[in-house]
Image (cartoon, rainbow, N blue to C red):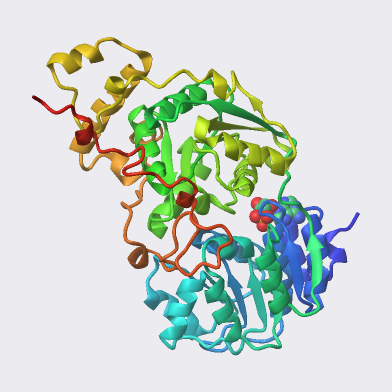
Amino acid sequence: MTIFSDLGLSQKVLSAVQDAGYTEPTPIQEGAIPPALERRDVLGIAQTGTGKTASFVLPMLTLLEKGRARARMPRTLILEPTRELAAQVAENFEKYGKNHKLNVALLIGGVSFEEQNRKLERGADVLICTPGRLLDHFERGKLLLSGVEVLVIDEADRMLDMGFIPDIERIVKLIPFTRQTLFFSATMPPEIQKLADNFLQNAVRVEVSTRSSTAKTVTQQLVATGAKDYEKRAALRDLVRDQDELKNAIIFCNRKKDVADLFRSLDRHGFSAGALHGDMDQRSRMAMLHNFREGNLQLLVASDVAARGLDIPDVSHVFNFDVPIHAEDYVHRIGRTGRAGRSGKAFTLVTKREGKYVDAIEKLIDQKIEWLSGDLSSIAPAAPEEDKPKRGRKPRGGKESARGARKEPAAEEALTEVVAAVESSAATNGSAKDGTSGAAAKQKGPVSPAPAEPKPRRAANDDAGRSENGRGRNSGSRRGNRDDEATPIGFGDDIPAFMKIAARA
Ligand code: AMP
């Protein structure tokens, strides 16, 4: 068995590791730390949850003990795809670097430039950035990258998905060729391999997981449901209520609009819920995460990009409100539960149209996922047209209300949704609007600060212009836009309610 003191780390680092309570290095740490300390390039193929962050933070701390930072010339640079990941890495520096006096600067969007400038002026030993904000600082002339000795590119495959590769290539050109590069990715598609070949020299390759594995400790089940939003929401509520041992759960949606809609619906139905998506400002996202980690919120509705790589220990359940279109996203989502040998449960709602995505997932994970109660053939036909919810309108009197009185289960549910929607939109300053759960506030006390309403990307986010689902404007993306998968005709399923009202003679 390897122990930390075998790896060549400094005393100060070893003492912080001991205080963190770690007894032995994880495989990625065991593989990556010794070559990193020898100033070799490293290609680490590892997902979050494997101890990957410490595998570059610990050797960096040791190497940084020699030398001093100069104003506006950071000594090391870490690139992260999202603000949360960047903030998490900064926390790691705080934790493992508590015996060091290093200046760590976090350059992410949603925080004022002035504050970040002051940190750069003081001289940063460690600069942790999202690519957009780094380039903004560079273009303002506040930063020189010619002193960077160590470059870390983390979550490279997610960078690719988010369209950041052109930015990364630009940044790398600004850093001396003599640098040391530590490159991490959960998966190695050909584009990432090409990048790694360009950026790394004679790198040591450390691989600790394959992208197609789901933890054995996670029980996975599929739940067949009708395709209408209100049917899916009802199915989800039933599923959540049926769980005896639900401590907390992440509910994944494919689109950020659905994150907001589903969150509001859960809130109206009295669940303790919060939401996390890429358009929320930084403060709100951090507050939301904090509340979820602390147990003030039981359910967190999230998109893939917002939740990717977040270190939220001990999530008991994952619910997929939509089947992920890209099979590997399923593996990442499911990976939020069943961590560190704990047991977890993962449920995926499946509509008839999504059956093909389930096939792809089963192929990737090389495993059949069982149906909870009946497969897609068991789905009852959708409620008749007249029982569909009329969005944003109160049920009218006369014929329509008589039809509503028939009490089809789906129709009754739909009616509840409509009335709730009208009530909620009337209460413009309601808690549901700001992304925290009124129910949560009622049950567990205040969960503020509350997230803001979505804002235009460029204004709100440093790494703007990239879509939430990661298929950005200047993307070298391998996947294309999710919405391309099934091009709707006309309004598709989203026909405005007023167009469905029968014309009066
Ligand atoms: P990461 O993969 O970097 O997101 O780390 C996942 C979790 O593992 C974090 O909560 C770390 O605190 C924890 N961790 C990192 N290294 C070790 C270790 N050697 N032993 C136990 N836990 C660790």
